[in-house]
Amino acid sequence: MPSIARRLVDALVLLWLVTSLTFLLIHLAPGDPAALLIAPSASADDVQRQRALLGLDAPLPLQYARWIGGVLRGDLGDSLVRSQPVLRIIGDAFPISLFLGGISLLISFVVGTALGMFQALRASRSADTTLTVLTTAAYAAPSFWLALALVVLATSGAAWLGLPGWLRLPAFGMYDPAVSPDARHVADLLRHAVLPLLVLSVPGVAGVARYARQSLRDAADAPHVQTAMARGVPRGMAERRYILRNALTPLVVLAGLTLPGIIAGSVFVEQVFAWPGLGRTMVGAIAGRDYPVVLGLTLVYAAVVIGSNLAADVLLLRLDPRRRIR
Amino acid sequence: MPRDLRVKASLAVLIAMAGAALCVPLMASTPSTAIGDVLATRLVPPLSTDRLGHWHLLGTDAFGRDVFVRLWSAARVSLGVGLAGSLLGGTLGVALGAIAGWYGGWFDRLIGAVSDAMLAIPRLVLLLVIASLWGPGVESVVTVLALTGWMSIMRLVRAEVQGVAVLPYVEGARALGVASPRLLRAHVLPNALTSAWVAMTLGVGNAMLLESGLSFLGLGVQPPAASWGNMIAGGREWLLVAPWIALSPGVLLVMTVVACTVLGDGLRLSRGASHAVSRTPSPAA
Image (tube, rainbow over all chains, first blue to last red; front, side):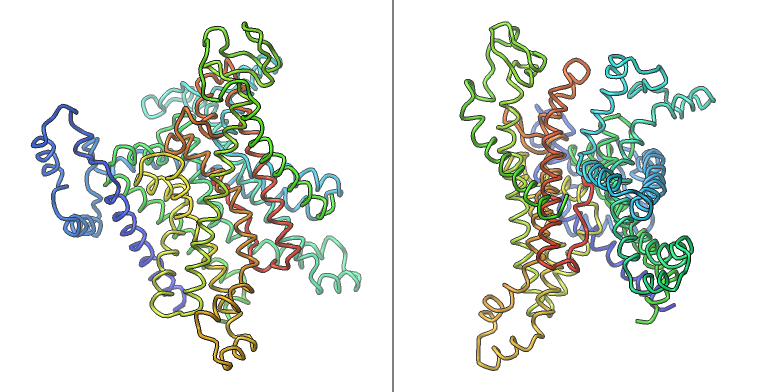
C-alpha cells in the first residue's frame, strides 16, 4: 500500500528532525562535560586537553556530522562519563524499562478496557459515578507521589494497620537477577516488582478506562444502535456487534497516547525504586551533560513513540475500512 | 452530580485554594522558610503540640517548619507556575497557530515540522533536556513549560483559523478592503479561540504536575523556597518516620489537578467545542 510506505518515510524524517533538534538543544546547554569530569582544581589547559580528547573542541557542525555518520553505521558513540559504548549502556538499561513498561502497558489496556466497558454498559449510575471520580483522581496523581504513598502503605502502614504478612511488600534491597538467576531470586524480583508495576499501571488504567467509557457511550448513542434495539435485536448481540466493534477499534490509537505517559512514569518510578532503567539513565546523563547518552536515549524514546504511532495507524487502517477510502 | 454543579464546585475549590495560598502565609506567625529551634520542633506529628507549646495542624518537617504553612506558601509557587506556564505556552501556541493557519506557506511547514518533532518526544524527556539549558529555578520552569506546551494549542488554533478563513463573512470583509493582519486579528482569531481556552484550562493541571515532577527530580524550584514537588522530594527521606511531610502536598496537588480537569471538561461541553479537544491532560508525572 503506497500510503504505508509514505508514512514510513514520514516517520524516518521525523526521527531525523527529533534527533537533530535534541543535538542542538543539548549542545546549547551551558555546562561543559569535560570540566565536570576532571578535578575542579584543574587548569584551563587541562580542561582544554580533556575537551580535545572527547572530541568536544571541534566546531558544532563537524560534531554533528560525526555523530550522524556514526548513527548511520549503527554506532551511537561512547559515553563521556562512563567510557562505555552508548549502545551497551542502552542495552543494559532497556530490558529493565521494557519489563516495567511492557507489563504495565498490558495491564493498562486489559484492566482499563474492562473497567471502561463495565462503566459504560453494566454499571449502575452510582457505581459509574464512583468509578469516574476514582479514575479522574488516579489520572491526576503524580506517579512519584503515588509511589511514596504505596511504600508507606505497604511497609509501616501495613504493620500499623496489622495487615497480613504477604501484603507487606518490599520497596528496595532486591538481589540483582543478573548476578544469580535462580528461582528464589526470580521470586524476589517479582515481589519487588509489584509496587513499581502498580504505580506505573494506575494512571494507565485510569486513562484507558476514561477513554473506553466515552468511546462506548458515543457508540451506544449512534442512531443505528437505536434502530437495531427498536427492531428487537437482543441487547447482548447489539452490544457485541454494533457497539463494541465500533467503539473498541479506536482504542488501538491509545497505544500511541499511553506510551509517552508510561515512559514518563517510568522515569519517576525508576528514580523512586532505584531500578537502573532508561529513565534513571536519562536523568543521570542530562545532569552530567553526557551528550552521546542523552542523544542515544532520545533516539530510542522517539523511535519507540513514532514506531508505535505508525503501528497504530497501520493497524487502524486494516481494522477500519472507512479509513481506506481517502 | 449535574455538570453545572460540578463546574461550580471545581471553580469553588480553585478559588478557595488561591485564597488560602494568599492568606495563610500572611497570617502565619513565622515565615515558611525560617528555621528556629530545630531539636524542639522537628518531626512533630499532625494535630499535636511541639515542645515550645505551638500546635501544628499537619505537624512539622525535619527542620521544625510547620507543614501547613509551608504547604500554602508552596501553593503560591505551584499554582503560579502552573498558571503562568500554561498561559505562556498557550499564548505562544495561539500566535504561531494563527500565523501558520492564516498565511500558510513555508512558515506553516516549518512550524508544523518542529511541532511534530517535539510531540514525538515524550514531554517529560523534552522537559528534562530543555530544563538543562538554564539553571533550576522558578523562571526557568515556567519558560520550559511554555516551550514544551505550545504544540497542541498551535495545532488547534491553526485548524480553527483555517476553518474560519473560508467562511463567507471573512470573504466579505476582505472584499470590503480590510487589511489581512487586521482581518486575522479582529475577525478571524476571536472566533478561533474557544478550544484554545479549554486546552489552556486543562493545561494548567498538567503544567502543575510537570512542575512538581521537575522539582521532585531537583531540576525545578529549589529549596528553601517551597513547591509541592520539592516538598514531596524533601519528605522522601523521612517517609517511614514522618509520612505527613511527603504525603500532604500530593493530596492538594491531586485536588487541584482534578478541579482543573473538571473545569476544562465543563467548559468544553458548555461552549460546544466538543470536536476540538477530546484529550484530557496526559498522565505526565
